[in-house]
Image 1 (cartoon, rainbow, N blue to C red):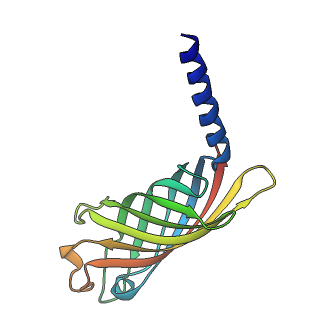
Image 2: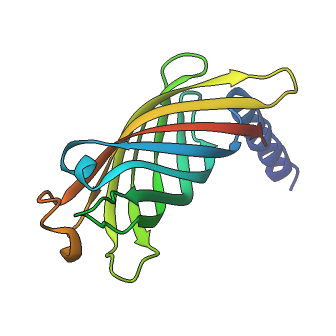
Length: 179
């Protein structure tokens, strides 16, 4: 029994040392801006939204990221064209790799769940980079820049967007807390 307790204590001590060396878990809430590119810019000029992101470290330089939010791309409107807004709830998961202190590269995959009845669920892929800045109040500022592609067919706007991928450059500015 004594050997079992000693072994358990040694394992827990080793595990605590590893956890102390890892990055901390972050929870961030932020605003998002999307600037459509390619054919997508023909039906929307800008997208805005917000998101909540959870980063769970698995090593000193690698973390799993979970991201959920809301994104609305405003449809272009003029005398001839009346495109409805594209409103989605993007749910993504991916990996975040820290290249240096605060600076990271990230890749995410997920799904875009439509709010509008006429839209379909889309596959999402997103590579990006970002930096985390420490603030005076012990919080963090997370600024990320990414390219995001939403792949899937929407029959109601096929004439205006012949591509199956709606791509945009995204900017996320978020306030993060270390948990």
